[in-house]
Amino acid sequence: MGLLKLADRYSKPLLEQAAQTALEFSKRPSYKTVHKILLAQVEDKHVKSDVQEDTHAFTRGAHYYGDER
Image (cartoon, rainbow, N blue to C red):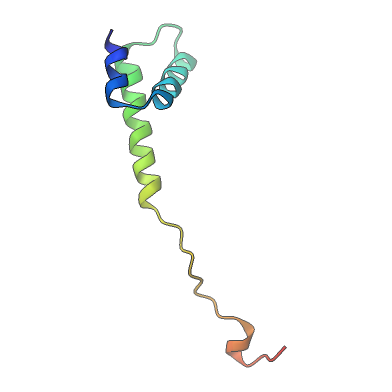
């Protein structure tokens, strides 16, 4: 019943992934294990979304340095 309540707060794919990960560690994972994995996944997603890839290059092309190729 506890794991089903986690589905109210987390997406189904995320919960499935956390459960699968927990099963890799133990044949009988606990609620606490799955919940901690979920928290880690959510935190990881937030960290990845906060890191923005720099699309602006700091290097200048050859034309900047006078190369007229």
